[in-house]
Amino acid sequence: MIHFFTKGDRDAGSSRQRAFLVAEELNKRGIKSAVHQPPLVLASRIPWPKKIKPIWQYLKIFKGIKKGDIIYLQRTIYNKYFLILIVFYKLVFRRKMVFDFDDAIYLHSFSKTKILTKLANVVIVGSHSLADWAGKYNKNTYLIPTCLKFDNYKRFSKDYLKSKEKTTIGWIGGAIDQYENLRLLVPVFKRIIADGLSIKFFLVGALGHKKVYNLFRSVKDLDIEFVDTLDWANPIAVPSCIQKFDIGVMPLVDNEWNSGKCAFKAVEYMACGVASICSAVGENNYLIRDGENGFLANSTDEWADKIKIIYDNPELTAKIGREAQRTIKNKYSYEANIPILQAILAKI
Image 1: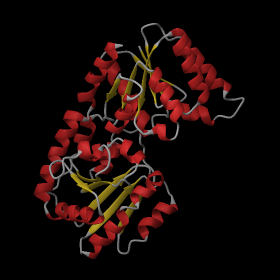
Image 2: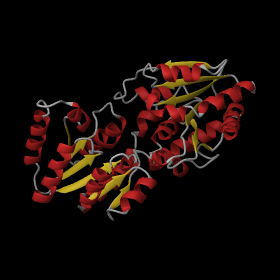
Image 3: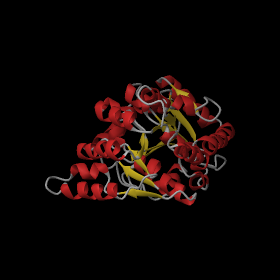
Image 4: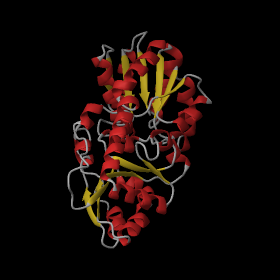
């Protein structure tokens, strides 16, 4: 049996895609799996003495883990008491352990990330940059990208041959945490509006933050629609939004944190057949073949030029969208990657 312990609940993107849905896929394939609660972030927020309850719950779960079972830790660095428990349990009872992470969490929690990386029988990461870091401390490091259930997105495939009043540029995620990245779009929008392009910006995940609202309301003549909340756990909520996009964007400031990120935002756009423009940072460079299944951009001028290509060429854009979908189905879907994970788990 595989015992998953997660950073967050099902609404948390990384936990949903790299634990909850993975456990479901493994169960479908006859590998018994369970996601244990409460998530680590919640346990960390509970004050003493109420914190005793989740710790006691973890202890009872550990007691029931049998020899031959596998402990699967998804980004579990957020509770020092859980970390102490897991280190003790691993060293004393010698159970097999997988450590999975999809961001450069070592930049903020170096010691805890290093301990779990060295202690794990297998480390699974979501990007090449993370694989380079983890490989220094554990030779059994594997790269499995953050994946999705392809059919849930394919049913919302973009049709570029339908007529439209404006070209919709879309972004989806937690906007306040991505504020510095989103700022990169402001000069791009100013440039293309000045050049006479008729566009609309559709931002999903603003969460009511005035700072985000004000950022884009400062762009003169920008037609913008904010969506504050979304049922993230609903499997069709995200793709049904993305289907409204003509262009999916993933701007990233070039820094070490962003270099470690998975390219999942673009993966979701591409799974819907939406042409994407992404900053040429980190994992985006491995996902995107510029001009074939999407576009890469390094500067305001490049962003503006590639938006114009999509704006002016619906047939080319539709072709790129189809190639994007093939990329996701073949390399970034559960159908493609769960068998790889099964083989890794079988080894331990």
